[in-house]
Amino acid sequence: MRMASWQWGGRDHVGTISTDGREATPLAVADASRGVLPLIQMLARGESLPSPSSARLPVELIKLCSPLPRPLRSLFCVGRNYHAHAAELASTVFSTTMPKDDPWPIVFGKLPECVIGPFDAVQMPVPAASVQIDYESELAVVIGRGGRDIPRSGAMDHVCGYTIVNDVTARDVQMRHLQWDLGKSFDTFCPMGPWIVTADELDARTTRVRGWVNGALRQDGLVKDMIHDIPTLIETCSRGITLYPGDVIATGTPAGVGMGLKPPQWLKHGDVVRIEIDGIGVIENRFE
Ligand code: MG
Image 1: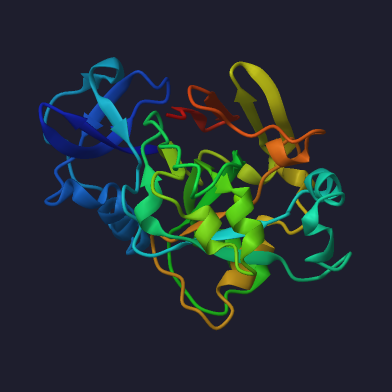
Image 2: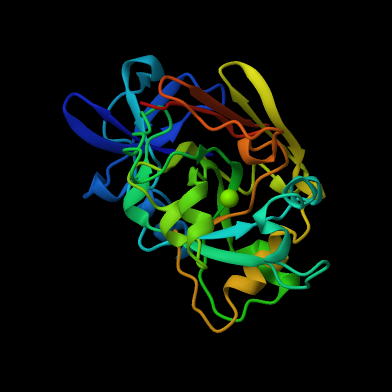
């Protein structure tokens, strides 16, 4: 099942998208402002989803929004989680921030207010704020049933589904501060969508993440090449911290970010970043 949030007829709607991606079915949800969060909560309680509130619509008539337009709290984001990406950063300032073979993942937060829709424009900051804007194509895990101290062995039972995020980053700001949150949380710096594919339809542990800039393939990674796999990330993030339905864990980006190129290539006004994950779909955002 694909759970989505969209605007049509001047109103917010939530519902499902057909498997071929062509039709949207709105569901009778009292408050559509939180996107599919009420649906995630219902599924986590073992309830069935509400019935359709009106007829199906062609997807080309609706404006898809982030499935979670304003997550309940900061996204859990994982840094440097693919071997090839870690290698490309070894020649940058990040070479000293993580010992080799560290058994613990890097985890930082991205403010929920920076989430935008799957095809919305990312607003470039003024140069005084940052001149090094970069993209990061990422698989995001959406938590279903919550919990604390979730063991790795049972972690996949807590996954509601998967979506795509671009972990847009102001590299100069990220490097300026010991913590990464500021450089990762500029307004509009988290395109998300186009929907959440539920875990019964996709085992994202075996999927593929690709990213293009202006049509040129920059990133192409397999999730199975992650340093810390999805169960490990859930175990890590839930250690002493209760996870709730609708929490998002962005799992890190494959090699090929702008900072890793020689010389580095930062995003410019008018650039378009497209991210595709097999079994989920595509997001595409212009930087303006
Ligand atoms: Mg990232």
